[in-house]
Length: 400
Ligand SMILES: *Cc1c(COP(=O)(O)O)cnc(C)c1O
Image (cartoon, rainbow, N blue to C red; front, top):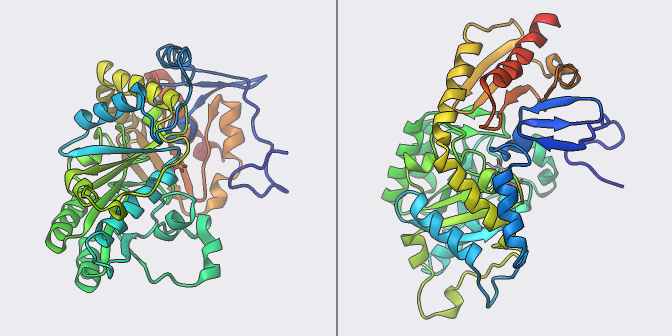
Protein backbone atom coordinates (compact mmCIF):
# COMPACT_ATOMS: atom_id res chain seq x y z
CA UNK A 1 0.00 0.00 0.00
CA UNK A 2 1.19 3.48 -0.88
CA UNK A 3 1.84 5.77 2.12
CA UNK A 4 1.29 9.39 1.05
CA UNK A 5 3.31 12.45 2.16
CA UNK A 6 2.04 14.89 4.81
CA UNK A 7 -1.27 13.02 5.14
CA UNK A 8 -3.23 11.37 7.89
CA UNK A 9 -3.81 8.14 5.99
CA UNK A 10 -7.03 7.41 7.87
CA UNK A 11 -8.85 10.62 6.94
CA UNK A 12 -7.15 11.90 3.79
CA UNK A 13 -9.11 12.76 0.65
CA UNK A 14 -8.67 10.34 -2.22
CA UNK A 15 -5.89 11.83 -4.36
CA UNK A 16 -6.64 12.67 -8.00
CA UNK A 17 -5.45 9.83 -10.16
CA UNK A 18 -3.27 11.18 -12.96
CA UNK A 19 -3.18 9.13 -16.14
CA UNK A 20 -1.37 11.58 -18.40
CA UNK A 21 0.40 14.94 -18.31
CA UNK A 22 1.40 17.31 -21.07
CA UNK A 23 2.44 20.96 -21.02
CA UNK A 24 0.77 22.68 -18.05
CA UNK A 25 -1.99 20.05 -17.92
CA UNK A 26 -2.58 17.04 -15.70
CA UNK A 27 -5.17 14.55 -16.92
CA UNK A 28 -7.42 12.31 -14.86
CA UNK A 29 -9.92 9.99 -16.53
CA UNK A 30 -12.57 12.71 -16.49
CA UNK A 31 -10.80 16.03 -16.11
CA UNK A 32 -8.01 18.13 -17.59
CA UNK A 33 -6.49 20.59 -15.14
CA UNK A 34 -3.75 23.21 -15.14
CA UNK A 35 -1.11 22.32 -12.56
CA UNK A 36 -0.86 25.63 -10.67
CA UNK A 37 1.87 24.31 -8.34
CA UNK A 38 4.19 22.75 -10.97
CA UNK A 39 4.53 19.48 -9.02
CA UNK A 40 6.01 21.10 -5.94
CA UNK A 41 7.47 24.00 -7.95
CA UNK A 42 9.75 21.87 -10.09
CA UNK A 43 8.10 21.39 -13.51
CA UNK A 44 9.08 24.77 -14.97
CA UNK A 45 8.89 23.66 -18.63
CA UNK A 46 5.64 21.75 -18.23
CA UNK A 47 5.14 17.99 -18.48
CA UNK A 48 6.25 15.67 -21.21
CA UNK A 49 8.49 18.22 -22.91
CA UNK A 50 9.85 16.84 -26.20
CA UNK A 51 13.34 18.35 -25.78
CA UNK A 52 13.73 17.04 -22.23
CA UNK A 53 12.33 13.65 -23.22
CA UNK A 54 14.90 13.52 -26.01
CA UNK A 55 17.76 14.32 -23.61
CA UNK A 56 16.84 11.31 -21.52
CA UNK A 57 16.35 9.05 -24.55
CA UNK A 58 19.77 10.04 -25.90
CA UNK A 59 21.54 9.33 -22.62
CA UNK A 60 19.67 6.05 -22.15
CA UNK A 61 21.37 4.71 -25.29
CA UNK A 62 24.62 4.83 -23.27
CA UNK A 63 23.81 4.30 -19.60
CA UNK A 64 21.28 5.48 -17.01
CA UNK A 65 23.65 5.64 -14.09
CA UNK A 66 27.31 5.17 -13.24
CA UNK A 67 28.57 6.03 -9.77
CA UNK A 68 31.08 8.82 -9.18
CA UNK A 69 33.19 6.71 -6.80
CA UNK A 70 36.42 6.15 -8.75
CA UNK A 71 34.56 6.79 -12.03
CA UNK A 72 33.35 9.81 -13.92
CA UNK A 73 31.28 10.59 -17.01
CA UNK A 74 30.33 13.37 -19.39
CA UNK A 75 26.83 14.24 -18.16
CA UNK A 76 28.12 14.99 -14.62
CA UNK A 77 31.29 16.72 -15.86
CA UNK A 78 29.34 18.83 -18.35
CA UNK A 79 26.69 19.87 -15.83
CA UNK A 80 29.37 20.86 -13.31
CA UNK A 81 31.17 22.90 -16.00
CA UNK A 82 27.89 24.49 -17.08
CA UNK A 83 27.02 25.49 -13.51
CA UNK A 84 30.50 26.96 -13.08
CA UNK A 85 29.91 29.46 -15.89
CA UNK A 86 26.16 29.84 -15.33
CA UNK A 87 26.28 30.67 -11.61
CA UNK A 88 27.62 34.02 -10.40
CA UNK A 89 31.16 34.73 -9.18
CA UNK A 90 33.31 31.87 -7.94
CA UNK A 91 30.48 29.46 -7.11
CA UNK A 92 32.42 26.87 -9.07
CA UNK A 93 32.42 23.55 -7.23
CA UNK A 94 29.37 21.32 -7.68
CA UNK A 95 28.61 18.47 -5.29
CA UNK A 96 25.61 16.52 -6.57
CA UNK A 97 23.00 14.65 -4.55
CA UNK A 98 19.65 13.03 -5.10
CA UNK A 99 17.32 15.47 -3.33
CA UNK A 100 17.07 18.96 -1.94
CA UNK A 101 17.14 17.83 1.68
CA UNK A 102 20.39 15.99 1.07
CA UNK A 103 21.85 19.03 -0.71
CA UNK A 104 21.15 21.05 2.46
CA UNK A 105 22.66 18.31 4.65
CA UNK A 106 25.74 18.41 2.43
CA UNK A 107 25.97 22.21 2.73
CA UNK A 108 25.66 22.13 6.53
CA UNK A 109 28.24 19.38 6.83
CA UNK A 110 30.57 21.32 4.53
CA UNK A 111 30.18 24.48 6.62
CA UNK A 112 30.86 22.62 9.87
CA UNK A 113 33.85 20.72 8.48
CA UNK A 114 35.27 23.88 6.91
CA UNK A 115 35.93 25.13 10.45
CA UNK A 116 36.81 21.70 11.88
CA UNK A 117 39.54 21.48 9.23
CA UNK A 118 40.91 24.72 10.70
CA UNK A 119 40.56 23.46 14.27
CA UNK A 120 37.89 26.05 15.06
CA UNK A 121 35.89 23.43 16.91
CA UNK A 122 33.77 25.94 18.83
CA UNK A 123 31.85 26.88 15.67
CA UNK A 124 29.02 24.38 16.01
CA UNK A 125 26.05 26.71 15.59
CA UNK A 126 23.83 27.54 12.64
CA UNK A 127 21.92 30.82 12.34
CA UNK A 128 18.69 30.39 10.41
CA UNK A 129 15.25 31.94 10.02
CA UNK A 130 11.92 31.65 11.73
CA UNK A 131 9.42 29.93 9.43
CA UNK A 132 12.30 28.51 7.40
CA UNK A 133 11.99 25.23 5.57
CA UNK A 134 15.00 23.27 4.35
CA UNK A 135 13.74 19.70 4.01
CA UNK A 136 12.52 16.77 6.06
CA UNK A 137 15.73 14.97 7.07
CA UNK A 138 16.87 15.38 10.68
CA UNK A 139 19.43 18.19 10.41
CA UNK A 140 17.27 20.07 7.92
CA UNK A 141 14.34 19.79 10.34
CA UNK A 142 16.55 21.25 13.07
CA UNK A 143 17.61 24.28 11.04
CA UNK A 144 14.10 24.66 9.69
CA UNK A 145 11.44 26.26 11.82
CA UNK A 146 8.01 24.99 11.15
CA UNK A 147 6.14 23.14 13.83
CA UNK A 148 3.66 21.82 11.26
CA UNK A 149 6.39 19.78 9.61
CA UNK A 150 8.80 19.19 12.46
CA UNK A 151 6.88 18.73 15.68
CA UNK A 152 8.46 15.29 16.08
CA UNK A 153 11.68 17.12 17.09
CA UNK A 154 10.00 18.15 20.34
CA UNK A 155 11.13 14.72 21.55
CA UNK A 156 14.67 16.12 21.89
CA UNK A 157 13.92 19.46 23.56
CA UNK A 158 15.58 22.75 22.61
CA UNK A 159 18.54 22.48 20.25
CA UNK A 160 21.64 24.39 21.44
CA UNK A 161 23.22 24.38 17.97
CA UNK A 162 20.57 26.34 16.06
CA UNK A 163 19.29 29.91 16.45
CA UNK A 164 16.19 31.08 14.60
CA UNK A 165 15.58 34.77 13.98
CA UNK A 166 12.91 36.80 12.17
CA UNK A 167 13.84 38.46 8.87
CA UNK A 168 14.73 41.86 10.33
CA UNK A 169 18.15 43.49 10.21
CA UNK A 170 17.92 44.27 13.94
CA UNK A 171 17.46 40.59 14.82
CA UNK A 172 20.30 39.67 12.48
CA UNK A 173 22.70 42.14 14.09
CA UNK A 174 21.74 41.04 17.56
CA UNK A 175 22.30 37.37 16.70
CA UNK A 176 25.75 38.12 15.29
CA UNK A 177 26.59 40.18 18.38
CA UNK A 178 25.72 37.27 20.64
CA UNK A 179 26.82 34.20 18.68
CA UNK A 180 29.38 35.25 16.04
CA UNK A 181 32.31 33.24 17.46
CA UNK A 182 30.20 30.06 17.70
CA UNK A 183 28.50 30.24 14.29
CA UNK A 184 29.76 28.24 11.33
CA UNK A 185 27.06 29.48 8.98
CA UNK A 186 24.01 31.55 8.36
CA UNK A 187 21.49 29.56 6.27
CA UNK A 188 18.49 31.18 4.59
CA UNK A 189 15.92 30.73 1.84
CA UNK A 190 16.74 34.06 0.17
CA UNK A 191 13.90 36.59 -0.39
CA UNK A 192 11.12 33.97 -0.50
CA UNK A 193 10.39 31.44 2.24
CA UNK A 194 8.33 28.77 0.52
CA UNK A 195 6.94 25.93 2.60
CA UNK A 196 6.95 28.14 5.72
CA UNK A 197 4.14 30.20 4.18
CA UNK A 198 5.34 31.95 0.98
CA UNK A 199 6.81 34.76 3.08
CA UNK A 200 8.72 37.50 1.29
CA UNK A 201 11.36 39.79 2.70
CA UNK A 202 13.71 42.52 1.57
CA UNK A 203 17.10 42.20 -0.07
CA UNK A 204 18.58 44.59 2.55
CA UNK A 205 18.45 41.69 5.03
CA UNK A 206 20.64 39.57 2.75
CA UNK A 207 23.08 42.41 2.07
CA UNK A 208 23.54 42.94 5.80
CA UNK A 209 23.91 39.18 6.31
CA UNK A 210 26.72 39.16 3.71
CA UNK A 211 28.48 42.04 5.52
CA UNK A 212 28.20 40.43 8.93
CA UNK A 213 29.33 37.03 7.63
CA UNK A 214 32.40 38.70 6.11
CA UNK A 215 33.11 40.68 9.26
CA UNK A 216 32.95 37.65 11.57
CA UNK A 217 34.19 35.02 9.09
CA UNK A 218 30.93 33.05 9.05
CA UNK A 219 29.80 31.21 5.89
CA UNK A 220 26.65 32.43 4.14
CA UNK A 221 24.46 29.66 2.75
CA UNK A 222 21.57 30.22 0.31
CA UNK A 223 19.01 27.45 -0.03
CA UNK A 224 17.74 28.29 -3.53
CA UNK A 225 16.09 24.90 -3.96
CA UNK A 226 12.75 26.69 -4.35
CA UNK A 227 13.86 30.20 -5.41
CA UNK A 228 16.41 29.13 -8.05
CA UNK A 229 15.71 29.39 -11.77
CA UNK A 230 13.67 32.55 -11.70
CA UNK A 231 10.93 31.95 -9.14
CA UNK A 232 11.57 35.28 -7.35
CA UNK A 233 11.79 37.21 -10.63
CA UNK A 234 15.59 37.03 -10.43
CA UNK A 235 17.42 34.17 -12.14
CA UNK A 236 19.00 33.35 -8.79
CA UNK A 237 18.92 35.56 -5.71
CA UNK A 238 22.63 34.72 -5.64
CA UNK A 239 22.98 37.05 -8.65
CA UNK A 240 22.19 39.93 -6.25
CA UNK A 241 24.03 38.83 -3.10
CA UNK A 242 26.58 36.07 -3.34
CA UNK A 243 26.59 33.25 -0.81
CA UNK A 244 29.56 31.01 -0.04
CA UNK A 245 27.48 27.89 -0.63
CA UNK A 246 24.40 27.64 -2.87
CA UNK A 247 21.89 24.80 -3.02
CA UNK A 248 19.71 24.06 -6.06
CA UNK A 249 17.10 21.33 -6.51
CA UNK A 250 13.44 21.17 -7.53
CA UNK A 251 13.60 22.90 -10.97
CA UNK A 252 17.22 21.81 -11.57
CA UNK A 253 16.09 18.89 -13.76
CA UNK A 254 12.95 20.64 -14.97
CA UNK A 255 11.06 18.42 -12.53
CA UNK A 256 12.05 15.24 -14.38
CA UNK A 257 14.26 13.36 -11.92
CA UNK A 258 15.04 14.02 -8.28
CA UNK A 259 18.44 15.66 -8.20
CA UNK A 260 20.11 18.55 -6.42
CA UNK A 261 23.44 20.28 -6.13
CA UNK A 262 25.44 22.01 -3.43
CA UNK A 263 27.76 24.55 -5.02
CA UNK A 264 30.76 25.86 -3.05
CA UNK A 265 32.84 28.92 -3.81
CA UNK A 266 36.65 29.00 -3.99
CA UNK A 267 37.06 29.87 -0.31
CA UNK A 268 35.03 26.86 0.86
CA UNK A 269 36.69 24.50 -1.61
CA UNK A 270 40.15 25.68 -0.50
CA UNK A 271 39.21 24.82 3.09
CA UNK A 272 39.27 21.14 2.10
CA UNK A 273 42.03 21.12 -0.52
CA UNK A 274 45.34 20.07 1.04
CA UNK A 275 47.52 17.00 1.68
CA UNK A 276 45.65 15.81 4.77
CA UNK A 277 43.26 12.94 3.92
CA UNK A 278 41.21 13.78 7.02
CA UNK A 279 40.33 17.10 5.42
CA UNK A 280 38.51 15.34 2.56
CA UNK A 281 34.77 15.84 2.35
CA UNK A 282 33.44 12.44 3.44
CA UNK A 283 30.11 12.26 1.70
CA UNK A 284 28.79 10.40 -1.34
CA UNK A 285 25.13 9.69 -2.10
CA UNK A 286 24.80 6.53 -4.21
CA UNK A 287 23.00 8.29 -7.03
CA UNK A 288 24.93 11.58 -7.02
CA UNK A 289 25.56 12.82 -10.55
CA UNK A 290 23.03 10.38 -12.02
CA UNK A 291 23.56 10.48 -15.78
CA UNK A 292 19.89 10.82 -16.72
CA UNK A 293 19.37 13.60 -14.16
CA UNK A 294 22.48 15.52 -15.29
CA UNK A 295 21.56 15.15 -18.98
CA UNK A 296 18.07 16.48 -18.45
CA UNK A 297 19.34 19.27 -16.16
CA UNK A 298 21.72 20.44 -18.89
CA UNK A 299 18.87 20.57 -21.41
CA UNK A 300 16.62 22.31 -18.89
CA UNK A 301 19.19 25.08 -18.39
CA UNK A 302 19.67 25.34 -22.15
CA UNK A 303 15.91 25.83 -22.61
CA UNK A 304 15.85 28.36 -19.78
CA UNK A 305 18.55 30.42 -21.52
CA UNK A 306 17.70 30.01 -25.20
CA UNK A 307 13.97 30.49 -24.83
CA UNK A 308 14.32 33.59 -22.65
CA UNK A 309 12.62 32.28 -19.55
CA UNK A 310 13.37 35.42 -17.53
CA UNK A 311 11.11 37.29 -19.96
CA UNK A 312 8.40 34.64 -19.51
CA UNK A 313 8.65 35.05 -15.73
CA UNK A 314 8.48 38.82 -16.05
CA UNK A 315 5.25 38.40 -18.05
CA UNK A 316 3.80 36.01 -15.46
CA UNK A 317 4.59 38.61 -12.78
CA UNK A 318 2.93 41.40 -14.79
CA UNK A 319 -0.22 39.43 -15.54
CA UNK A 320 -0.45 38.31 -11.91
CA UNK A 321 -0.12 41.89 -10.68
CA UNK A 322 -2.76 43.10 -13.11
CA UNK A 323 -5.22 40.34 -12.20
CA UNK A 324 -4.75 40.60 -8.44
CA UNK A 325 -4.83 44.39 -8.29
CA UNK A 326 -7.55 45.66 -5.93
CA UNK A 327 -8.59 42.11 -5.02
CA UNK A 328 -9.62 42.05 -1.38
CA UNK A 329 -11.90 40.12 0.91
CA UNK A 330 -12.52 40.52 4.62
CA UNK A 331 -11.23 36.97 5.21
CA UNK A 332 -7.89 37.70 3.58
CA UNK A 333 -4.88 38.67 5.68
CA UNK A 334 -2.48 39.44 2.84
CA UNK A 335 -1.93 38.99 -0.89
CA UNK A 336 1.75 38.61 -1.76
CA UNK A 337 3.44 38.48 -5.13
CA UNK A 338 7.03 37.98 -6.22
CA UNK A 339 8.20 36.93 -9.68
CA UNK A 340 6.47 33.71 -10.66
CA UNK A 341 4.70 33.30 -7.34
CA UNK A 342 1.49 34.57 -5.75
CA UNK A 343 0.08 33.77 -2.33
CA UNK A 344 -3.23 34.63 -0.70
CA UNK A 345 -2.91 34.30 3.07
CA UNK A 346 -6.26 33.98 4.83
CA UNK A 347 -6.98 34.73 8.48
CA UNK A 348 -8.47 31.33 9.20
CA UNK A 349 -7.37 28.09 7.50
CA UNK A 350 -11.03 26.98 7.40
CA UNK A 351 -11.65 29.58 4.68
CA UNK A 352 -9.73 27.37 2.25
CA UNK A 353 -11.51 24.10 3.06
CA UNK A 354 -13.04 22.73 -0.11
CA UNK A 355 -10.96 24.90 -2.43
CA UNK A 356 -9.10 22.00 -3.99
CA UNK A 357 -12.29 20.35 -5.27
CA UNK A 358 -13.72 23.74 -6.34
CA UNK A 359 -10.59 24.31 -8.44
CA UNK A 360 -10.61 20.77 -9.80
CA UNK A 361 -14.15 21.22 -11.04
CA UNK A 362 -12.96 24.32 -12.91
CA UNK A 363 -9.92 22.62 -14.43
CA UNK A 364 -7.20 23.82 -12.06
CA UNK A 365 -5.09 21.74 -9.72
CA UNK A 366 -4.17 23.60 -6.53
CA UNK A 367 -2.79 22.48 -3.21
CA UNK A 368 -3.43 25.09 -0.54
CA UNK A 369 -1.78 24.38 2.82
CA UNK A 370 -2.64 25.82 6.22
CA UNK A 371 -3.62 29.48 5.63
CA UNK A 372 -1.96 29.72 2.24
CA UNK A 373 -3.52 29.55 -1.20
CA UNK A 374 -0.80 30.02 -3.77
CA UNK A 375 0.22 29.53 -7.38
CA UNK A 376 3.67 28.72 -8.72
CA UNK A 377 2.86 27.92 -12.31
CA UNK A 378 5.00 26.29 -15.00
CA UNK A 379 6.77 29.11 -16.89
CA UNK A 380 5.36 27.89 -20.24
CA UNK A 381 1.82 28.81 -19.19
CA UNK A 382 -0.14 31.02 -21.60
CA UNK A 383 -1.80 34.26 -20.54
CA UNK A 384 -5.23 32.68 -20.88
CA UNK A 385 -4.26 29.72 -18.71
CA UNK A 386 -2.68 31.92 -16.05
CA UNK A 387 -5.74 34.16 -15.94
CA UNK A 388 -7.83 31.02 -15.44
CA UNK A 389 -5.71 29.98 -12.43
CA UNK A 390 -6.00 33.45 -10.86
CA UNK A 391 -9.69 33.85 -11.68
CA UNK A 392 -10.39 30.52 -10.00
CA UNK A 393 -8.61 31.73 -6.85
CA UNK A 394 -10.65 34.94 -6.79
CA UNK A 395 -13.91 33.16 -7.65
CA UNK A 396 -13.63 31.06 -4.48
CA UNK A 397 -13.95 34.16 -2.32
CA UNK A 398 -16.79 35.58 -4.42
CA UNK A 399 -18.89 32.41 -4.30
CA UNK A 400 -18.22 31.14 -0.76
C1 LIG B 1 11.64 21.49 -1.23
C2 LIG B 1 12.71 22.18 -0.48
C3 LIG B 1 13.76 21.46 0.12
C4 LIG B 1 13.81 19.97 0.15
O1 LIG B 1 13.96 19.40 -1.11
P1 LIG B 1 13.57 17.85 -1.33
O2 LIG B 1 14.00 17.57 -2.74
O3 LIG B 1 12.10 17.74 -1.11
O4 LIG B 1 14.33 17.07 -0.32
C5 LIG B 1 14.74 22.18 0.77
N1 LIG B 1 14.72 23.52 0.82
C6 LIG B 1 13.74 24.24 0.24
C7 LIG B 1 13.78 25.73 0.30
C8 LIG B 1 12.69 23.60 -0.41
O5 LIG B 1 11.70 24.31 -0.95
